[in-house]
Amino acid sequence: MTQHTRPEAQAALQALNQEGDRPGLARRPTGWLILALLGAVASGPVAAQTKPDQTLVSDATIAPKPGSTKAKQLSTSTNRAPPATFAQWLETQPSSTDNVPSVDSATLRRIFRDAVEKAEQRSPEVRQAYTAYEAANADVDEAKGQRWPQIDIGSQTQSLKFGPGNRNGDNSGNVVTATISTTVYDWGRTKNTIGSREHLSDAARSNYTAAREQNAFDVTSTLVELGKQCAIVDLSQRFVERMATLVKMLDEIVAVDRGRGSELTQAKARLLQAEAAHDSAQAKVRDAELKLQKLLGETTPPIPRTRDWPIQPGNLPQLLQQVDTHSSLRQIQSEANAADLNAKAVKASGLPTVNWTVSANAGVGGAGQRAPWQTMLTLNWAAFRGGSTKAATAAAGHRAQAAWQRVDQQRRDLEYGIRAADQDAHTMLSRADQYERLSAETDQVRKAFFEQWYHLGKRTLLDVLLAENDHYGNRVSEVTNRFGGYAAVLQEYASAGALLDWLETGRTGS
Image (cartoon, rainbow, N blue to C red):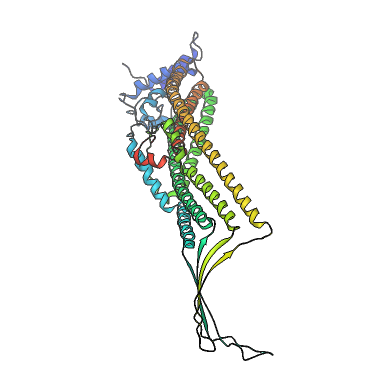
């Protein structure tokens, strides 16, 4: 076959434009297909495969003006590969998350668990909750100490008398007194105080457990958010590359056919939108990384760069059964029990108290005699305090009732949180599967639209751009819903107080 020279390609373009039954053929995509064939013949052997980073349409596709810089460059590179179609180029571009080994459930939970443990070691909230628990234990010991005999030791110097009057009275020397007192009967005030402090200690321990669960949820949900934004960055990067390739192709076409400048403008606008979406996704990645640095420190744990993580909704009936053992609910129940006992202790403080007292005076009087030991029973009764004791008793009783109301409200909130999170998890994961199937369809649509525009002229460039944008939007929606479902699963476990147990054992319910 006789090879066509570059001027012959230009002559073919002019002949196509002058053809009577098909006017302006060269301005249609079919004309460019013919020119591409002419350029392929003139360019030499055809490469078997186009590299992923190769330009969509090679310089040999566009017949440059004779004597131009591009023509000179082409004359020195006759062995370059011919242009591939946009659809073929897309097929050679693997997704940035394809070919990435999938992660199994045990590995993912280990990544989560290591991050949670590291965050727990440096979490001020967790340390504060544990310190409060130790303080509550000390309060229990302080209340228990009231059951033991109370020993008081005092001392005073020799009294010095002055002024008018008798100076010959008793002139005691240094005095050391010791008093031992123990409660014989106090209407249960000490017992109720100890019980109230023990329940407060249980509440502090439950609060510490709740703080650990909240820390685990904060870390894991942030890791899921980071994974989502990284996946969106990968998708947006691919979208930017597709738009950039299309712009470069049209830029080369417009260099020969100025009438297609509007198409180049449309493609550039879409490229700018793609770059803006990419920048927005990268900013959200940085936000998630900053939150992780706040929780974990400077080191960010490695997370899977796949869009499918082995996270499935838990067993709803079993998770609902765990509500009664949730740490936050136990905390409120313990606080309510403590309030009940405190109300009884306040009431008992207004009743008579019987104490047994033993005292001794170790001082030596002026006559050289020591005071004898004394023992007695004492009765103390706050008979009148202006109504303050009665008011304190009523206030303590109302606080106890309010605490029990909080128990019912918390149980409802936890049950609703589990049900809502379970519904969100199933809905979002199902919707993600639908978007995945829709993305597969729109992938075929965008390729077909390009072929129809480039080869047949039955579609406009705007149709191609809209198809590309729809496909990108569907893939982003798939990622958003899938990772939203993962976050809902974590919320489901956290609402049941089973997140730490799931990270440790992988069980979806007790």
